[in-house]
Length: 397
Image (cartoon, rainbow, N blue to C red):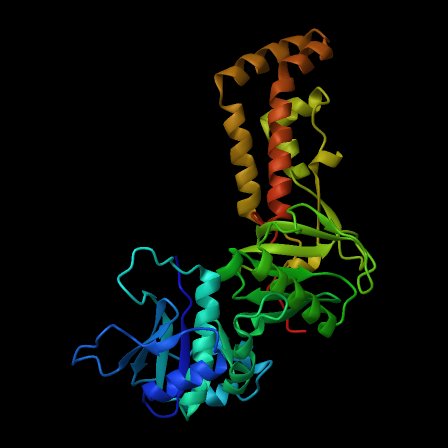
């Protein structure tokens, strides 16, 4: 299991005073045992400290050098903390803080879950910040940058249940715009749930989007993915959203990995257009489809060959050559079977004799295969597992 790691950025290299740190932690979180570690440090580990936290150990490792600068991390941080760039630029050393197994050699000590480790590390980092002057910032799991003042305040709630847990220290909410719609996605939520949130619901202002994504993130951290947010389900209208919102577990169209996607079920902003999955250019030229068209088993204008997409999600409406090449290869794979060769011969013979019904019967199994392909491609396009057009990068709101 991956464990959460916090990086505390320092103006000057140094570890906190062990006694002062323990007393600080006891004062901040008196319900938990804080003590010196039973693990003895060797002589060559001056930059390492262990503190007992309940039945487990916390470790602090001093790195007398700056962290590699992460432009995106501090760019995200600057949206809620404008001084973040300056703080990151001034630090000259950093501490690496994480949990580290059982405090004693006891097989009965239960390993910490990710959530438990997160809460313990959060509480501990707050104590370090209070006990050690000169802390400039905290970078949580390499994803979220926050001011020490925010950590000092919110980390006091490290062990509070939902909805009071300090989830704002653990994830970032990034806004973007598509057309007239302001959306947002999370960074850091997947460590808890395996998925980020991608929220793109029409008709909301930036603040309302932030509130909804924050509420959803907090809920998912506490309850997990399956607690009331079902894949393929929908939220009904409420006081702030006057239309139904679809929920899908899919791959992000913004390339942030697996997401829980929230999007308007109805086209409220005139943003959706209908496109042919298998275009007429392939239907007119591919031998399999030519035969199916002759017997009335394929028509590119039918509903099953249509997919509804948002043009403002794409750079242009020029179809990707790789997408259409993939369709052609899939169709040619059906064509190249011995079974189709027999069916094609029989169907052509039946057509020569004017027996369209018989020809249709011979070719129907391949029409079903084409329909299965259409359904699979439609789902892939809807879930952003495949792209008919070049995806457009998000814009700043």
